Amino acid sequence: MSAERAPGRLGEWLARLLLAGFGLAIGVATAEIAVRIAAPQSVLLWRPGPFVADGGGFFRLRPGHRGKVTNRTEYEHGFRVNSLGMRGAEPPAPAEGACRILAIGDSFAFGLGVEEAEVFHQVAGAELREAGADVQVLNGGIPAIGVPQAVRWLQRHGLEAAPDLVLLAIFVGNDLRDANADYDNWAVVDGQLATPAGYSPLKDWLFNNLHLYALLKTALPAGVQQRIRAALGMGEPWSLRYAREVFMIYDPDVPPQVQEGLDRTDDALATLTRLAAEHDFRVAAMLVPDIVQVDDLRWAATLEHLGLTGGSQDPRQPNRLLRALLERRGVPVLDLIDSFDTAFDRGDALFFPNDRHWTVGGHALAGRQLAGFLRPRLNQANCAESPAALSPPAGPS
Image 1 (spheres, rainbow, N blue to C red):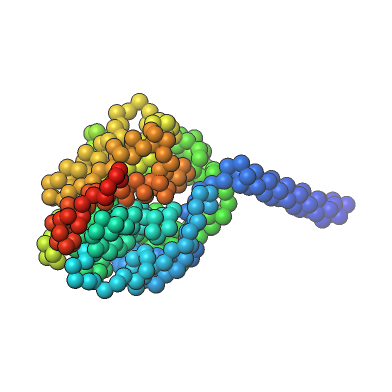
Image 2 (image 1 turned 90 degrees about the vertical axis):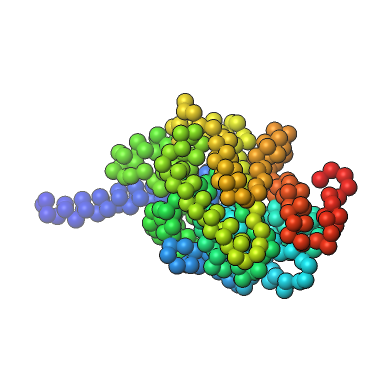
């Protein structure tokens, strides 16, 4: 009799498991729809992936690439990569008397979130041309790199563009962290970047396609995430560890990781100035502020999220450190922190709230400031027929 009941009980348990699985699937689907409606998650997506390996754990943009990029909540735009591996159209041949400016740096220099002509260095170039300068501006920005990687790319590929002036855009928010040696081991999988911590196709798919998964992965405070993952026998996620390490740049005591980033950035600046002397171009730098430096509420919320409240963090600390490096190397620097602080307090929409990259307004402000900063330096580089040709335009800039 018991043997006869066994198949029946097995079928009953299977039916219960199927019912429970179906209920779980319905619950997850309902939660996913609710998150997409009420709190859609900002995740950067490249379609198709634009990156190609460049040896030794480095990467660059694939020459000739055409694609789109979106963060799912705030922008979506197309972009093109020319044969030199730079965003934009094929550059014209260098002309006698013209000045070729090559901007290098990370996603801010690339112009993530805006169209080609709206990127700050293109805005500056347009203003300089209106003032009488014959300038060409090339976009050598590559998302997710630091200063050492930018200089390496310039040395390996960018010099082919024969620049008269190289503008190094340094993102204060994470470029010192990204200068560390452990950041030099990225992999490229189907044109996408795989983090130095390793690549999981399943996790990557979940993060890129499920808003619920992205919410659970990023929205919980650091302390809560750590407790949950510890209970599950899991280590701290790379994204959370990276965020905490990035925030070390605001510590006045200069932690060892920050010092390593400073040292490697300084070495890269030495290489950059040497290349300038060897290849007869000028160098200038621009410090790109992070939204947490100008938004007091976001600053406090970030400290709380990372469990760092009560410390001595200073939002202007990385600017002082980077300016000191640049001045010691004789590189003129435009620090945008004050102008962005003033404009943000005035209510200007300079940053995408979720993505934290610059909006069109942020690039426009940076471009105006950059044009004024570059005018005398273009004259020094003999990039205009006369100094008068680069006089500021009439009226406020």
